[in-house]
Image 1 (tube, rainbow, N blue to C red):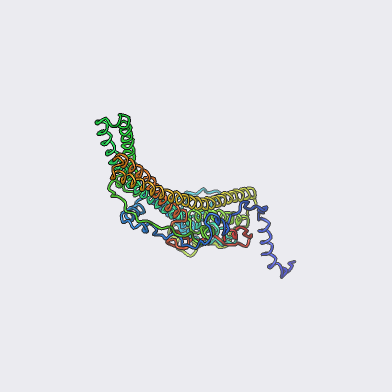
Image 2: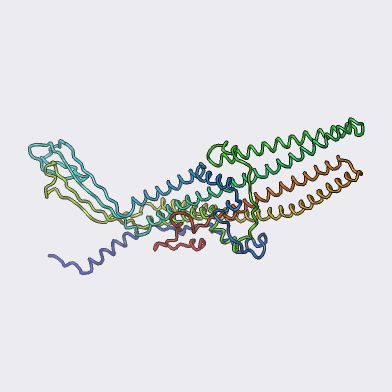
Length: 514
């Protein structure tokens, strides 16, 4: 006796399959990131910057404001040939290759192949199983147990990615690649700042060389006067010996300054990527004075998109967050569509007959029933990586704000020192004028005039040193402000930020980066 099938049974079967699949899911047990990204307030540097900050950010071609063609040429050479930039570009290429490799393995993928072999089969009861294209086929043997199985086959597989695992991994690889792109921008900035700083140091050393030469000439005049006065018995040997000692010290200063010039030139040559001795062909720098610009408005907040190291740190944190989504997606059943078709036969001659057709199509479902411990451990490790990445991001933001504050503080200190040093130079110049007037009127000695000149040159040396230091602090401040970098204007494709939400869970950290 046959009983009729209930009409509801076809509807119940899919529901039963879904229920069985969901019972194979793994719980994440509330795992999440513990470190939160910081977001500086608009007044984070208000005490250092002061009121009324409404200036512009540095321009990408900020080096040109010094109007020195030689510096422009050196910068272009360095950006073209420096090994650090070559390494950074290679890393971008490697990250892009990883992204393309992963993309080729997701979505619709296919395989195709052909096999042919020669085999002698056993004859238990004149029946044998023949492996053709990976399938076991029972064959009724006849007189000859020797066969030549052959197959032509093709397969297709489509990953449905219902829970967003592949999308999350793609987002992670995109963020990693973009972080490498921004790292290349950071390498450009670091190189440019280092090169311009050395060039400013070279300019200061040449200016100091001029002063030391003038001091040498003045010291020679003092020595000549003292020798003459000593020969006439007017001065004792002490003054002459003291002058000789000072000339010796001055010669040492000149030698050290010459060494500074040579070493700086060699360092510049190394940075250009064309060899250390490229720097020995340089002529004296001709730097124009660069005026200070007011600080940009909303500096602490906007700095997050103006410093390449901050942007790269954020992108790596986003890549780590995307990896947690990919791991969470593995907590749910993995469903793929698989299709196979081909021709299989015991002999190549029969391969293209209609009877050789074979194929299959259907879903392939993988349940994480036995992966609970592994997935929990993997997700815990992923969130630990998120905490580390966000911690590095927070550290980078703090250090960037601190660097801006330090450069501004040092610039103001140098400005104060420069003002006082200008007064000192004016006072020393006045002393020289008095000594010259006394000598002209016959109530002062030439030695006094020359000694006053030496004192004035000492003050001018301090002034030159402060001017050089101020210029280098200006360069450092440009670097601290990102050197003209803008995340919205990076060459190539726009920077991709990972902000996808999957139905399997809610993201609670994205808003902290927005």
